Amino acid sequence: MSEKQLVLVVDDDPDLVESVSMKLESENFRVNKAYDGVEAWDKIKEERPDLIILDVMMPRKNGYELCDELKNSEEYKNIVIVLLTAVADAVTSTSFTHMDGKTTLADDFIPKPIELDRLMEMVKENLA
Amino acid sequence: MPHHENTFCDKSRMADKIRVDGIKLSLELIQINILAHQDNQRSNKDVLRSLAENRINCPLIFYSAGAHRIQGAYCVLAEEADRLNRVLDVDPDLKKIVEILSPVGALSLFPHKFSLTLLGCLMNVFGKAGLPIYGMAASLSALTLTTDYEVLDHAIELLRPHISLPANHSPFRPQLRIKAI
Image (tube, chains in turn orange, green):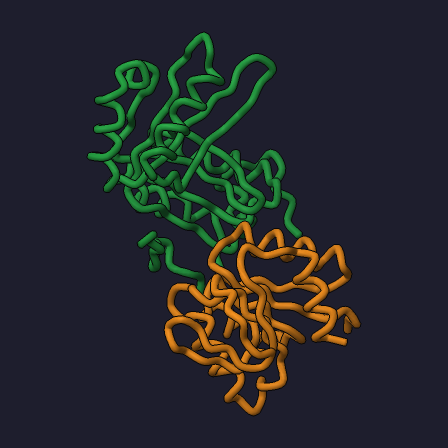
């Protein structure tokens, strides 16, 4: 069993998934990838990640829906979720209310375009 | 990990399907090719400037730079056809240096993992079926080509025997669109 922490990267932009994954791997994390919320659920059931980097706007199941489902699940509610959002409003660190009025219980968020170094700091802080 | 080198879509090696995480198809596009020109770099800049000034978005750009020549091709959404035509009509010099292909569509496979086998497979499948390739490019993750829009679904059917996709993969066609307001 590997001791490296597992991060699931979920975004419908393959280039963003790849760049974030490469950075995470260079920082000694293991990475799984998914390209929408439905695929992400499959990957979570296959192997529970320690942290999920989750885009908001995706086909089939968006990031808000997946985040809500995970945080309302006894089994998965403790997985750390970092939302990727285009909305950089001032928000608290545990609850996100966005322009469309939706609120999620993600653990953290980072606005797009992503600063990879900032994202890595955030991942490490949340997994410390 | 199966070794794919030099087995481009060989039916005797069908068990060694090339694993990709997904395929994406674009919306209907217009491809603007820059024709051979003495000052090719300037031509590319002229086209890009005109598109930018008229706020015509380019969802796909092919760009290659050699020692003395830059080759560019730019794709815009088919729904921009009228605006694009207006841009070209008022600038005959620009119109002379471009070739318009329409309707084209983009097919992307990801991640390519720098696999020459995937590239060879695509070329082989398209070549054998006589499907045109108008442009090809790689980004960090995706290997993308443009072809006739109406053959995109057929191309996927031809590729399927050679490609392994996740069971519950994302839809090929775009489900979301972000528009500037």
